Length: 328
Image (tube, rainbow, N blue to C red; front, side, top):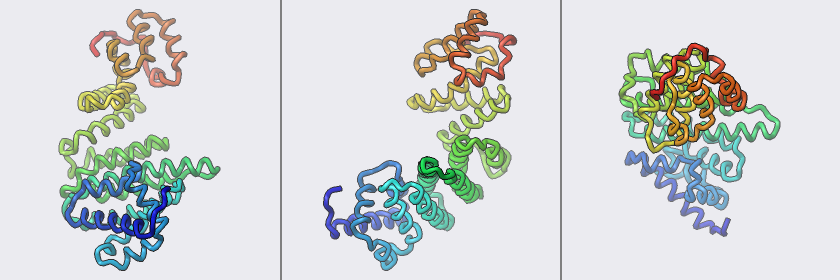
C-alpha cells in the first residue's frame, strides 16, 4: 500500500459515509449496491479498507455525526468486516458482515417501498460467498466449517421478511435461489422442501410476477431436485423451462442446465444433436449418444466407465426401455 496521510484517509472515509447516507436518503439503489459489494474487490472499497487502518477513529466519527449516526449499526460493523476482508481474515469478516446485514434488514423492514431490494440481493449474495470462504479458512485450520450453515439461517430470516404482502415479496425467489445454493453445497437438499412449499403453495405468490432471472435459477435447482427424486417428467419440464428462458449469452449457465437436462432427455429417448454437445463443451456425452444410436451396449458400458463420475444420473435409467428419436 502506498503512503496515505491521515487527512487523505479521513477524506475517503467521509466520502464513503456521505455516499451511503445520500444513497439511502435519495433511494439510489444502484449506488447503494456498489457500496455493499465486497466480492467485487473494487479499488474504492479496497482503498477504504486501507484508509480505516490509517484513520482508526472512524467509529467515533460515525456516532458523533447527525448525518452518519442513523446508520451506525450498519456502517460500523461493515467497516470492521471490510478491514478483516482486506487482511484475509475471512471468519471475522463474515461475523462482522452478518452483524451489519442484520442491522440492514431492520432498516429494510421499516422502509415502506421495495426500493432497496437490489441492495438486499447484494447482501444475500455477499453473505453466502463470505460464508463459503470463511468455511474454507476454518477447514484449513482444522476447525469445523459452520458459517455457511449460519448464512442459511440468516437468509431464512430474510426470506420471512420478504414473504409478506406488498411489493417486497418479488424478492423472495432470489432469496430462495440463494438458499438452494447453500443447501446443495452443504448436502442438505431436504431443506429445500419448506421454501418450495412457500413459493408454490402460498397464495401471496404469483410465480409469473418474479423476475425471469430468478425463475430460471429456481427451475434449474428444482429440476435437479426432481432428478434426485427420480421424477424425470417433472425434471424435464423444469429444466427445459430453465433452458428456454436462460439468457442465450450466458453459455456457462446453459451448460450447467444441459448437464442435467441431457441425461433426462436420454431417459425418455431423446438424443442431443452433435453440434449442441460441441458448442457447450459436453463432449463427454458423445460416446453415450453414439452407443445409443447404434444400440452398441459394449460402447455404452465403456463410455459410462470412462466418465463414471459424470454419469451418476444413468444409474437410474433403464436403458433397455429407451425409445430413441433424434429430436433434441
